[in-house]
Length: 351
Ligand code: NAD
Ligand code: GLY
Image 1 (spheres, rainbow, N blue to C red):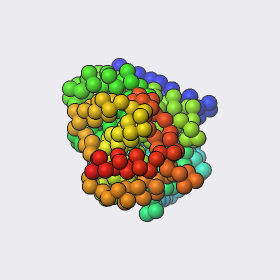
Image 2 (tube, rainbow, N blue to C red):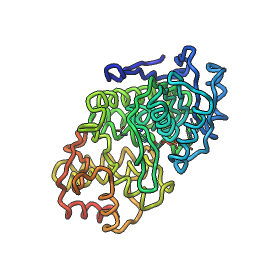
Image 3 (tube, protein in one colour):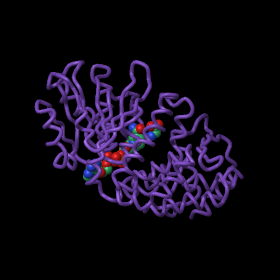
């Protein structure tokens, strides 16, 4: 069964098709297509996609976050320009968040924006990055520093593609799933707790339900706040702590989702110190993440380094550290006036 939901953005609205075989919903008419994928995903799924798009061109990139650069996005644009692709041509991103972000950004730049389709192949991309139109690449001065809001034409989350995802990558995607529950859906948190074994086993019905619930939540938030003027920032729960952890441990040591899992527990701990979240709810969150094979304590990082890395985060506004916290678990809020002594207590207790 394929479930379809809509991201409501006026004339830029688009469908998300979720389910085993969703790839078969791909319909590009007679438009020319450039498929962007990578060296890991191409041997697994490119043939299947080319069966539907026999005339498409393919741009195969090296694998990895280190290639999410302006140079790589430029190489895609070169392929489009040199290949004579027109304003009405299509870019198709077949991959995880890295491919989706770069391909979407290339599509946003070419002719000031041509259409693109997201075919996410990781759980993280299905529940988060393929939806919402954030595209971009990294710069040496910061992760995702260059980018554009450019909504896809359609998202096809084919759950069959998750079968080959390595266990660590799968668990990292589950961190983002838990994030949706922690930030706005306590009932979903209870449901996840009751489905831990099914989640670990990638049970198809459970996966379909998970991806659908997350996409419904993300679509609602994006429709209300496409450009992150307000509530979209709540999706960054755990991310300011997480980015500091990722940066200090070197990109690649921890997966993004793993750093977010640790960051969420630290955000919950700080929320408890503020009197906003019960101690048992901090334990509840940690226990669920643990059960899903996610780390919940940071590597050793000196507190001063941690604070200064957090202050470099994009969420800093007018020099004020803005953190997404839980007031209580199941309801995220943005807080701009966190007492430094409480933040340091959280860092000390996590060390
Ligand atoms: P990724 O794209 O690097 O994919 C993880 C690894 O899994 C890669 O080695 C990839 O080749 C491999 N892979 C992908 N699909 C596979 C499959 N089906 N079978 C086997 N291997 C597969 O990582 P990710 O976690 O999907 O995405 C992380 C990126 O997403 C980061 O760059 C992050 O900044 C970005 N992101 C963007 C948004 C957004 O809103 N645009 C949101 C969250 C994260
Ligand atoms: N992943 C955060 C966002 O899309 O806003």
